[in-house]
Image (cartoon, rainbow, N blue to C red):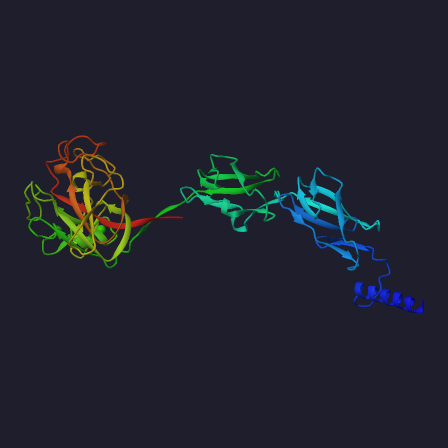
Length: 438
Ligand SMILES: [Ca+2]
């Protein structure tokens, strides 16, 4: 009998040892004492609790941790309070149906009666915007008439960063000031101030007004410096100019460089085909005279600056009086550009008019028709096709003697030029430049 008891005790010891190799004897009879879920985190706000969170377009597999690890029956069951929000499988896979707040109950099945509750936050994956932000650099933007459109969309962000639907709408509150397209490109229309309303489209119904002003612009003509310019003339007999005032040997004016001296009383004078002056009589059918300006370096230009003779002029050789006849003026030119001084390309006028598309018309206060006078004491800015050249050739193509309905004709001035007089064409100032928009 003693021997049997001894063996029984030994068997018990061996049994215990096989269940707990550490040698500690469980004090709970192998029952579950704690149920934890790895995915649950402690949330201290509100009623402090262990909470599980996931988005309503995701599934979440729970990993349950049972204590003690030696519990004999570690199987648990899952139930939840709101089956309309999610389902949970036998293996602890949470499947969302809608966003909201549910309660998950994880229960032991070993008869311990133990269960643990978790708050489950099923989050709307369609995160809505909470704010519309406009970059500081775009605040109170100033645009300019005729200036570049502004990319407002590039300066708009929504918070939070994971906002589901980042699309916003744009609406100008005064389309007479600015217009804005669906892509958020703002175009200035006229001077004034208004706002553009930026609105979310994700249902958050947020909006902000963006301030914008449209300012007038100044188009400033900037003349090219003429200091180093030189000029050559091309005439039927090679004579460089028609002298004016005093004598051929000591002319007062008429010289090519007088186009660059800043004085409208001095000028380059060239004899017209069919004219007779300074000992020169080019035939009426001879080629129109021209001059070539060498600017020494290639320059960008988009306008001609031209002054007709106006006022008096004096130098050591004497003086010339004012002369306001239209027939001493150039009516139209053909302008050409070159970078080698030999091969020239026609530069089209900014505003072609008349029966020759290459003619750049030189304005004056009176008509090209007939005999008229006008004081021309200000330079004209004449737009031409923007170009970059070192050499510019100006052919004096149209003047009073060849202005006629069957020759050169400007549509605003139908008729014939004055043919009885006017032997020379006089150019008081010639320049080139470009418009700077500020
Ligand atoms: Ca001059």
